[in-house]
Each structure stands twice: as structure tokens, then as C-alpha cells.
Image (cartoon, rainbow, N blue to C red; front, side, top):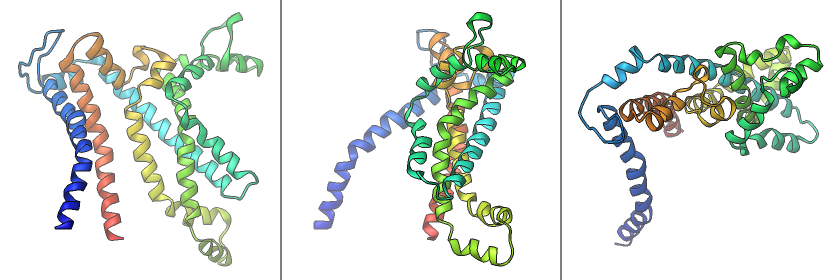
Length: 296
């Protein structure tokens, strides 16, 4: 009897959260999915069913969405690879027992506490393409170092623009991957390294054949988390580049299509595609993690 009461009490305590998630998360997902199959254009709702028309038009007739896919691919590859590499390097340095490790660890993690908007405003000044007497930021630095050929390289092509926009994201999230890698390094028994040294392995061989393989779960987790974050990037690009078609992203396209152009059906279709692409990354990882915990 007592156990039954405790179960009901536990359920009542969490029921507001369950209700809120059901309405404001899954309810809105369901509503957005429904709108994506409609012909809703303009301020007056139109729930006429059009099937997959909105989705087909995005891939066939919408050149902007194709630019979004290209930009997202460029941003994701550079952002994920750069963040993993910088995080691994800083973790390896901190794992050497440097003096003042706690200070440097906090220093690397601190950028995570800054919002993308603040980061974007700072980097917008750094990447200001102004020339002549109005030189500032990176252009001024390049000019001072007599590297004028690098001036405004980030505005030369859309590809270079997306690559440079990934830099502030790398700076901001590398501390996160550093913390993950550092925890993974500290979990590797020293006995493995000592045994390898006794067998004549060099430090590079220890890193390649022992440390890196043992860090694969950390790398996989970081890649999935960073990958889904890159798909949802909105505020950083807006703060750095504004609403430029050449540097457009699906999230910006979704916002403008829905709330500026009032094409609610097409905007909902873009949002559902973003949701699905994120779920493709997250759900397999969650299943793998739960199975691994169950085996332990």
C-alpha cells in the first residue's frame, strides 16, 4: 500500500513536467509537421493539404536552400574538425601536469559561458572588411604584419566566408571538447603507458596505438554533439554576417521564410528537415549509450 502511494506521489510530482514537455515540445513538433504539409501562405491560415509539395520545392526549385546545404556542410566540417583538434591539443598539454593547470582549464572553458550573440558582435568587428583609413580588426593586423594579401580573405568567396565564421564557434566550443578529452585522458591507466614504454614504444606510438583508440568514444560523443549544434546555428551567423544570402544557413532561411515572407508551409518544412537531420545524429547515439550502460 505504501509503495503504491509513493509511486502515485512520484508521478504527481513529475506530471507537470511531463505535461509541459508533451504540449510545448512534442505538441509543437506535431503542429509544425502538420503545417509543413499545407499550402499556408500569408497571414490567413490555409490548411489545404498539399502533401510533400513544400519539401520537393525546397530541393528542386529553391536555390537558396541548396546554398544553405552547401554552407552548412562547409561550416560543419570546419567547425567539428577544428573544435576536436584544438580541444585534443589543449587537453594533451594540460595532461602533462602543467603548473597552473586549474587556471588554464578555466580559461579555456570560459568562452562557453559567453552567448553566441556576444561572440558574434566581437568577431564581426574583427572581420570588418573596411579598407583604407578605416582598417580594423584582422585586416589591421594583417596590414601591420605586411600580409595585405590576406586582407578581407573571408569576403573573397562564400566558401571562405563560412570557413571564417566557423572560427569563433571553434574558439567558443573548444573548451568543451578539451574538458571531454581531458577526462578521457585521466581515465587511461598509467600502467598501459608504462608497459608500452618498457616494450620500447615511443611517445608517438603510445599516442597513436594506445591513447587515440581509447579516446574514440569521447571523439564520437563530441562529434555528434558538435554536429547537431552546427545544424542549428543561427545567432552566431546573424551576429557576424547579418542576413546575407551567400552566408545563409537553414535556420536563417527558416526564420525569414516563415516570419518575413509569411510562407508558413515552406518554413515549417525547413524546420522539420532540421529536426530530422538532428534526430539522425542524436537518436542512434542515445540508443548506443543506453545499450552500453545496460551492458555495464
